[in-house]
Amino acid sequence: MKKFKYILGCLLLGSLAIGFQACKKNPELAVKDVVFTDSVKSYTVSFYNTTTDAKSFRWDFGDSTSSTQTSPVHTYKTKGKHVVTLYATLNNGNVINGSTIIHVSKSSPILLNDNTLADWDTISNIVIPPTAASGGVVQEAKFDYDSQNIYVYMKLAVHVADQNIFDFYIDSDNSSATGLITGSVPGGGYDFLLEGMLIDPQGPTPFTQYQHIGAQSAFSFNALSIAGFFTLGTVQEVNGVTSFEMALSRSKISGLTGPACKIGIIVSTSGYSAIGYLPGNGLPPVSLDISQ
Image (cartoon, rainbow, N blue to C red; front, side, top):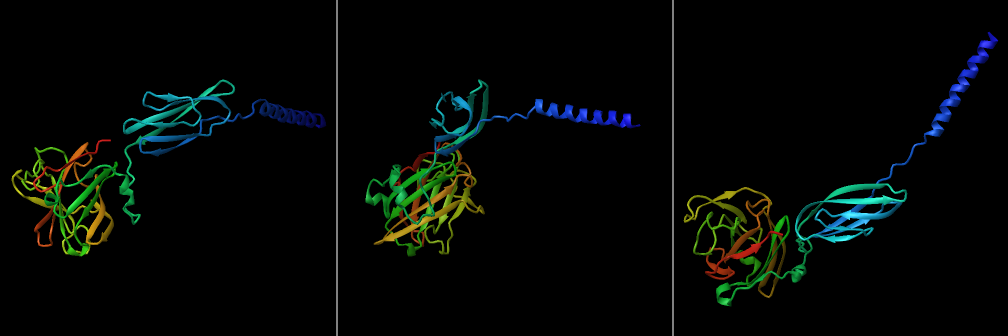
């Protein structure tokens, strides 16, 4: 019996030893991977590469261009979705890679919640009526856009308290084959009319979105109950001249997701007597390229 216990003990010790040796012969190896982050600003993307134990890198930016810099900055030529891949050659010669999806599109410097209109100083898309008579109270307008909004700045000789009515005639699909054909703003087929007391939100006539229906010659519109189709930003009045900024939501005004649109604006008194025009009385609308 003692001999059997001795043999059993030796077998158990031998098994432990074999298991211990097996663990020692197969250590768990760390798995290497590429590590990077990115920062997208309009068409320019900055890449920050923190991959370790690598002797060289190659970036494929997904637009038929590449780079061997460690942390490059790349500017795309067109908007869209791009798959970016980083290849890293490790010090042992192995090559590893990792990918991410980059979405690039035009951005805008316009902020509506900063209580200033100074950011519009950088915008070059400026429309001024050809004469004071053709513009009436409207002195100037500027436009910008990004993937979310079309931004509008206007400067006009009115008081906020006047409770003026604004009519935005919008050819959202940039086609005269659809929408209202009107002599008030010739040169477009107006799919939508945005109308109301825009710069005085407390006024009795709220700014409302209407969609054209029926024959193109018929001034017939349906009111739409779509919240958030516009956002009013900063409004400033100085010596009887009021300037304001706003955004039109491209996702909440049908058709504004396309490459272009046309806008004509008429400003009226609270009694609907026209006193201001953009781009000018009897002139075709402003054409906006919103394709980038």
